[in-house]
Image (cartoon, rainbow, N blue to C red; front, side, top):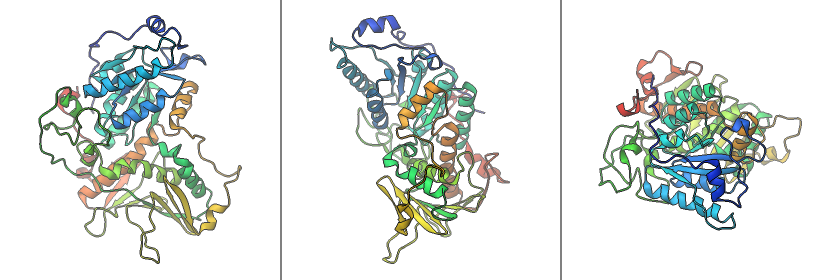
Length: 443
């Protein structure tokens, strides 16, 4: 079993005390609490951000717009990013006080120092996939609530590790599967229509996402100043710096580390973690998974099938064709005995179109009420209730992506036990479920 590295002593000065902070921002009615479970109604949750690349900055902007939180620290392996995030935060808070000046954000090159900061109640993790597990586990052990991006992990065993540690620590966890809350409510509506039998018995789900991950074959480059490349690699295998994996400075695109199996699960997992999550939700298998993984009949990077105990088959990126010869395609296509529902971030439709004309009644099955993923997390931190996408759910959805990647690599039929989370009678396949981290990231 992999154990997390211990906390090192904080490298920088300690977080501003509550009294010092309030003096520095005299006009701002900010009241901090050390623990969310003792929080008064007007207290603000103190947040630390681990990873402020493109996705992290997007989350940062969303949380900065909320009056019930206060961002007090950021961490990234690229100095330009932490400096930029610090400036963004301080500028936003300076605009809220009469003096127009605010200094109170810590920057941590090493996320372990941020987690060790007792002035932080919760963390937002928006790092590459291979860097989700260790920060999440250490944050849980430090008693901090967690919002972590999807896919939850780079490998399946790390996902179970997160689930176990979060349960033990009793912290509130939200997986960044925002389609459960947002994007016009289209996915929520699709799930309710499936749950209430509007397409009859569900037979097939088709998921429209790209290819599986591939081994990294990028050429090495000269490492830029201000980038801690060794820290970026973390538990992943050692290799030379690549700007494709870790772009220089502050950038505005989503880096291609997502395509490589050392760090992520390819497009199958990147968007698949969203869309397979909706499929699991609709099938009622949030805490389970398939029982078989079947490779494509012909050599292909699409068409892998997941077979569930219910008989439902989930198919990766392979669609039926209509009378015009074009694929009947969407992010998620639910095919039942009496019709089909197609749903994407841009909308929802059905075949026949009459299926969606009758709304879901108040007494019919309804999904968890949430229209704002961040708000749901914060409300659950205060109430102690479970979020719309807790660690177990996020892990199970990511597991589908891991199983798909393994299926494409091994190219043979695999039997899966979703309760034990092991392949049945297949030692070689079970070796694919975990990865030994680099020595410095284990004890």
